[in-house]
Length: 70
Image (cartoon, rainbow, N blue to C red; front, side):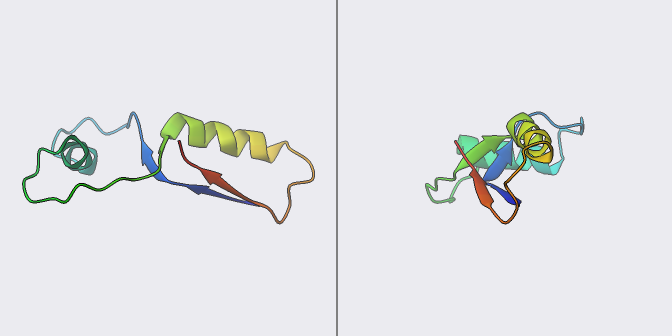
């Protein structure tokens, strides 16, 4: 069984405002000039964590793939 999340978004444990999550936030808000208008299938980090937990205890899903997007 494999889980395939889209672009994972949500709270982070990193508090430094110059971190990668801050750059991604600027990108998504359109604060970076010259970046084309792109779209991504997104999923919240908490939903990814929940999907992993559910998958651990779900019988009969061996060999299956799951897309995790909005």
